[in-house]
Length: 393
Image 1 (cartoon, helix red, strand yellow):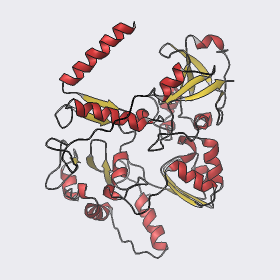
Image 2 (image 1 turned 30 degrees about the vertical axis):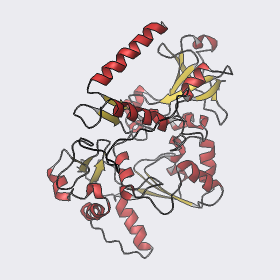
Image 3 (image 1 turned 90 degrees about the vertical axis):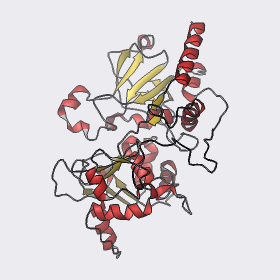
Image 4 (image 1 turned 180 degrees about the horizontal axis):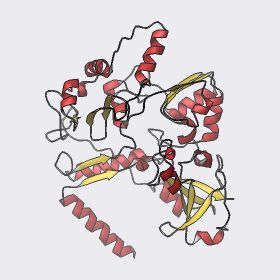
């Protein structure tokens, strides 16, 4: 009962506070209206209990893909330049970018390795925005939904065929070596050809040339010479000056006072919990995620016939109590305020609570992400993929 649960929570809190403890979380924590506050709360808890800067302790966000950290370090965020320097003018977040495409202010998109018309929320709006472009260029390694809409497609090397530095969530730099030889161009080679066609004078000959320029621009990488990365095949962790940094914050924090800082927000019922316990309609609450057989939007894993055999369509999982209210022998459509899916198969799950549905988004044809609107995290605008009200048709 409630009293037993309260005792368990207290015991867990004391165990965490007394031990060297590591908190690990995934992307889903941030896919709520208040995801940034949840991450701050995790950091606050680790800081409060002294679980920062120690062996076997800390906080660890598991990135969804291996170079997400590296792209952030290198200025791919709209509000930062490389090395997290602030730009004079901030760029557009993806939700804002699609709005500007619809308004005609963004007329061209160069899309590298992302399937915009599959993995983003509010797909009806996304497709409208894409249709309004004057030019769409795509770099990719397989044929995906966005490439079918492209004016120009460049087939480029995959991660398994290229040389380059990847930076993971552990701040670890790896110099990737090809597993498979390929005569296709790398992304940077395509970009250089286009740039020089437009009368620039780029003269990179290989990834080493690019990396040596990066060392000058990104201080946290400055000591990581190409030769050091070749020698240290297990990788090096930034900041890297004379040597790399295995663990952050052992002596101090990188603030003006050298002290840590709490970012506090008053308690609120989280969006998903609120949707479950303060329902004003008979609608169900849908949450989405992945399945073990496929990776992200499955653009590559669907090319494996064996993996496709295990999971060849998105299935909606429904609780034991709720399954009695539908005809399980036929497929049903999920509908929200923003759009609807194609007819989907339903299956019973004993691990789901009453009123909750779960499905994957691996198959483009399912149109799962059409169910979500523009609502997202209050700071980052990350879409709220973990909770939306739907009805079963």
